[in-house]
Length: 393
Image (cartoon, rainbow, N blue to C red; front, side, top):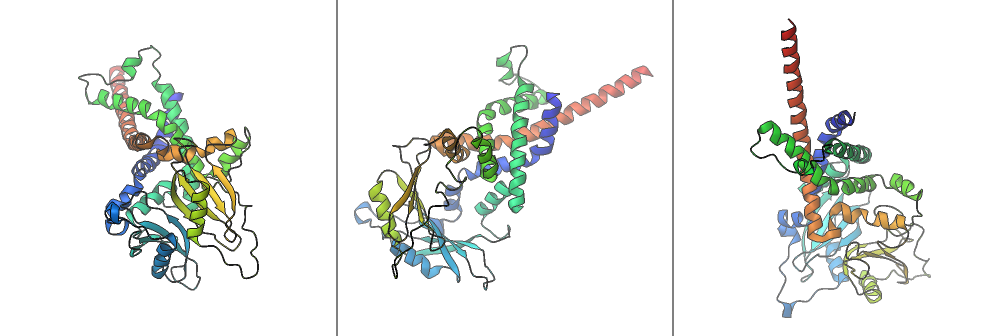
């Protein structure tokens, strides 16, 4: 029975899992890929240490504003992950009169010269072709190029894939107790046995990474369903998979004529409150009631694995309204906070990223070897049936 369940689940969801796994493995290095594929945009020449001087974030944003597409608004900024990388600003067109309304653009700015290096159409609204390769791979990975419907399908297939992986373990389990044989390749074996050994060994060794990656993938595309499940066992304060700041937190109404504080001031407030870690992303307020959201990573005083600290800053007074340390709080919050670091592999540094990359490569290997094994057994059964009929006659 378990063999049949494993077989048909593998044949049904295996092909799509092969695509999703392969693209997910590639995306472990999406930042590096952007810099390799578009060095003219993302890579900068850092001056010698004794001449290095960074412009203020206000100056850098002012440069981005000069190059932004007409009708677009500042959405967020990604801080450089090392001294040789540009600031990356995300702008979305929010003007119904514009033909490109809804499109998202990256604007790259050199932090040392405050000069715009270029602009890139990153997220064409409702279109999957004509976008950069890394953006295309991302969309293929999370929604199969089918939008929100594809995301739901992906989540369901990930759940079925977990069952497929578990039934594979049941089928693999050596009832004879010969675990060494079950975990290795048979020496000097033929093609049929090699394919069988490849399927079972890759399946076993990748399971320990695939199971948490598949579950976290479900959370990324179906966060409300996973939240509802987790809340059955533990309270959860985390609002969703992509934000730790509750939606009810707003900037206080400003006094008459009171302007919003500058982004550099927001940055300085956060750095003064928490100098530990590295700034990695800042979300701009979406309206007059929203807050600045500033995110830091590598905050080792929280954790070596989930060292992320997020701040909600009032856009008028500069008051810090909320600080969220990921990996803290209730059991439910800790569980959900671990999902992105596990899915991306960042929880365990380069080791984790390489393991997630290899588990992604394992998905097409498992599908191809599984299909070959199925065809081999069908052919063998067909020959056995023909032989039996011939002997009967």
